Image 1 (cartoon, rainbow, N blue to C red):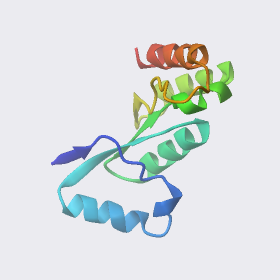
Image 2: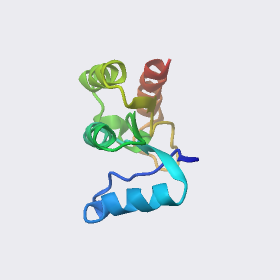
Image 3: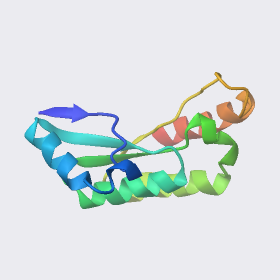
Image 4: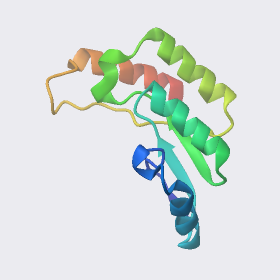
Length: 120
């Protein structure tokens, strides 16, 4: 069995055929999938998708490009999901991305530290 560790199956591009995509993946040997979030809305969407689909799990977090939008309340909500949602198994999609000047490195670093603490 294969495990796709990074699939944005929650994306609206799959709204019309998501179930069929999941069925084809399973038929092809991909029995497990991890749906990584990029912000609070996609974190919730990944959790909801994981809860409604066998073999799909959620990663929650704030992408570095969106770090400037993160609040302490967001981090607390993510913590609640990490501890309270059975199918949340990872923190992601998080990290540092210095390709663009914004958000500032300091902002990205502060949010990334929060995400690492959640992961621990």
